[in-house]
Length: 88
Image (cartoon, rainbow, N blue to C red):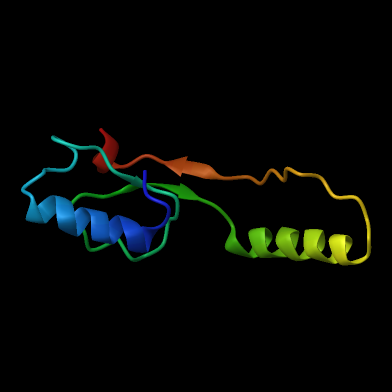
């Protein structure tokens, strides 16, 4: 599981360099669903979420902190697991 698609791309390049086949030898997934990995021969499983909503929530929490309001230590947002060939 990679933090984001840029890191996942680096991991995939290294796996290719070492002749490790995805998904036969190793399953790979990314925590982002951008276009960065679209050209990879095997579709990569990813988490799909709304970047705008993440930014909106983060700004809201920051403003609350700056105003001295009590904020939750945990914020939950919607996401979707997009299962593709890389984890089958």
